[in-house]
Length: 390
Ligand SMILES: *Cc1c(COP(=O)(O)O)cnc(C)c1O
Image (cartoon, rainbow, N blue to C red; front, top):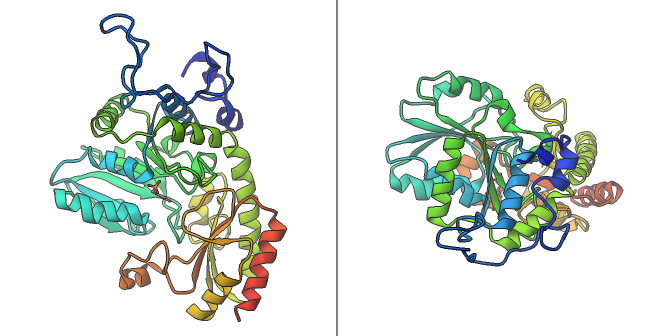
């Protein structure tokens, strides 16, 4: 960070300005898309900090600086996808190492653990980290604790500071990673709570316009940053300049988008809680949420995702989903448009039915990604669909 960026304090200002310098040759206010693979060297071995775009690219660099600033971290990395960011972190481990992960971790992360890294001799224990202590699951081989909070789709909230404090007190502290995709840095900054690594799928809120697949990592420790850069540069998991430009553009409106997502999600969660056709609402901003106290301490708002369980059976859920007109039936989340997901049939179908049942992913569970359309239209749409369903 240079001195100008250091005195940009507020999140809203950082979202617009961090990492973005006017182009020195033209004065262009927006960071250009540096579509170049290589850079001319003035003389043998003398260049302007860029020699090859896998190693570094100015558009990606601007995005990485911005991401680090928003997470109040020192070093940012923009990767090809959220799953690619996860894979880069797993490359820090060695055969025989062990990971403790939240049990309802993002499905793609679970697949990476179970079907890719298990084959390389890295084992993972899936644990309900809302209960008991992380110490119950850790072994002498545990090198990484993988936290995702709020979780998907049940929006369980894990106490980041408690886990980070425990980890730091160990003789060989395991790294603590937080997948911060659902909350976004607007509502939650895990590095400030003691986490070592923040991971994002920038595909979701950070880009916010459902037109990019990308990922990010942010850390504070210089040595860890060096190791991550080494793996990223060695394996090629980078965000290309066009994608980096789009995410950088999306970030400029992150603060106002998140405020609107949260305002509407919170209203909808309250309405759903009172609705006669609803059994249960999961939303970290509701006082009925089982980890409401932890959520209040570590989050600055409940976020934009609301999950609920309908009364009735799968046919009622099907009628409800097929009656929606403003909400679109689609996977993914975090864009300006409202989406609705049926986890058991869509996003979480690859999880064995038995595991889904123990997790609480039932046939009438519905996940909303509340967009920034008029909240009257959104609630009106849900209310009419819920009435048609019964
Ligand atoms: C989408 C998602 C990912 C994976 O990101 P991709 O960009 O799809 O690879 C990881 N974690 C969470 C919480 C996600 O929602």
